[in-house]
Structure formats: C-alpha cells, structure tokens
Length: 142
Image 1 (cartoon, rainbow, N blue to C red):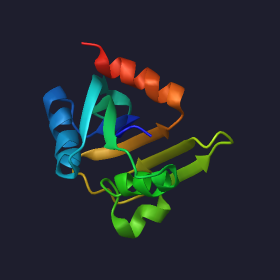
Image 2: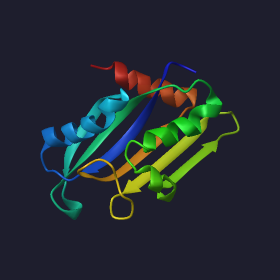
Image 3: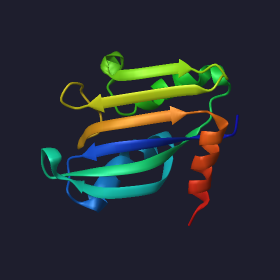
C-alpha cells in the first residue's frame, strides 16, 4: 500500500460563492491534516443558491489493508456527528482481489452534519491499484 490514498468526493454547499465553497471545505479537512486537489466548482441551483464542489482528497494510507474500513469511517466522522455516524449511507466491501470499495453519502436533511454550510456529500474510495494509479496521474497534471 502506498503512503496515501486518493478519494474522489462531491460536496453540495450552502453558498453560491466559489471562494466561500472552497473555504468551507478547507475548514473541514485542514484540522485533520488532509489536502485536496483537482477541484472543480459549479453553481448548483437545484435546491437553492448552492455550490457543487467536486474534488479529490489525499488521505494518509492505513497501516494495513484490513484498516481501510475504519480509516474511511474516521474520515466520515469529520463531517458527521459521532452519535449519527451509523445513520448515514455507508458501505465498505472487500473485493475478491483484496481491494476495498467504500462509499458514504450524507445529507443534512436527514443527518446532523458538523460542517456549517455542508448540505450533502458523496465520498467514494476504491483501493484497487489501477484506480489509484489513474487518480495519481490526475494529481500530477498541472
């Protein structure tokens, strides 16, 4: 396992301002020492004057493949109050080749979220080497 895992994410934030959307997300991930790259912002007027921010988080790799699900759940706890972590749509599945597939969706309409302005999020982690390699190529592009 490499020293980091790359995790594509989508966030819907309660602002129509691009700089504010980036600030809200950075305020959530910075205390955990996480970084992000390859961010794309767009106005998301479906439910109001909101922003959609699609980005890739850089996570420290767990000490072993067996720790991937707990590391993913720890990441989710940055966004969801601990008392409600079991109420979100969260799945972790180990594939036949040993790779992990983890996915979480949170929605402020049904779950108390810790990040002011965060309305909805989708986190999707695939540890399969070919997927991580593709994400790393995107990280290396200017």
